[in-house]
Image 1 (cartoon, rainbow, N blue to C red):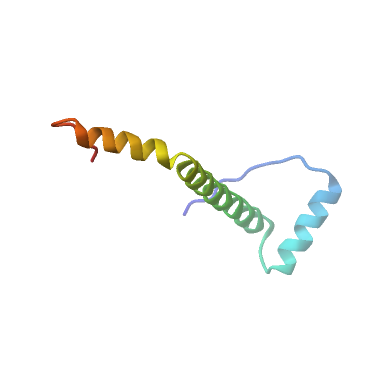
Image 2 (image 1 turned 180 degrees about the vertical axis):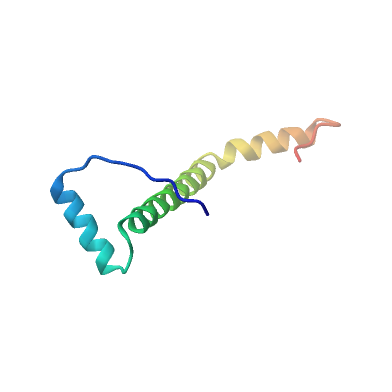
Length: 79
């Protein structure tokens, strides 16, 4: 995969912490940042799926009623 160079301004202390953690994990600073971004976005995906699951669970009765109404209407059926 091709890599793109980026520049970011952060406080010196943040840079030092990031470099130290990258070393601890045996990664370059760029690879460490990439891992953090991937972990964060995967977490967002999971939180989104969890939220969708909660929404469906909370409103399951509405979906059940709509599906039952479709069954009573000739020719109208949810896929």
